[in-house]
Amino acid sequence: MKQIFIDVSDDGEVRIETKGFSGKDCIEESQFVKDLLGNEIARALVPAFYMRNKEKVKRHIPLCG
Amino acid sequence: MSHISKIELEIKDLDALKNACKRLGFHFMTNQKQYTWYGKWISQEPLPIGITEDELGFCTHCIHVPQAVFEIGVVRKDNKYTLLWDSWVGGGLQMYIGKDAGILKQAYAIESVKKTAKLKGFRMTEKKMDKKVRISLCIS
View 1 (tube, rainbow over the protein chains, first blue to last red):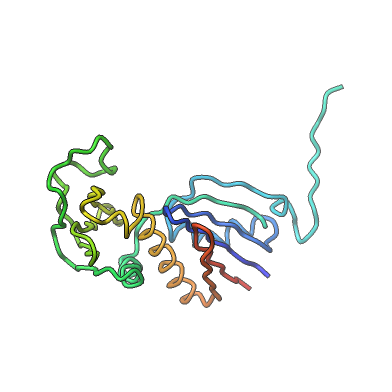
View 2: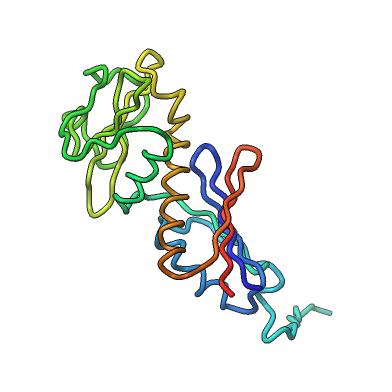
């Protein structure tokens, strides 16, 4: 199930979390909430962001030596 | 979970602001061009962005909080709205709108999301948690 959580603190701060999306869908599908409430000032990607059709994309970091 | 974003809240939807006032028991005074405040800027804090000292006390609409002496000015600037109010304790606003009008902004955000969720046909739940409200939208 795709879900968007919007936390609004008592001091007016807004934080958005997406759940159940894979890949970049979360960015596109939650954009309307961001446009509605204001400007996105920070974004953190979590592991599911790097999943394509539930398949994990491994990233290899080149190491010296 | 896929990503987490932090949003700087902007007030763009006047209907949502009116509904936020209704939710909090405040009165939205359409087209009231002045709001009650101390009448002189004596704070050391900077003025809100885009607002000059001469503009204080004047507004596009006004919000009246029944228990408070002072009022909140709603000023239209570049297709969005800025809230102006005097936070002096004797004016009585702080207790009802919170620090930086956080409680009013919170109610605005909820009403704004509620309206759009209804239009888009998303299921929405609202839950009061410690020092915040969590809105959940089910997309599918």
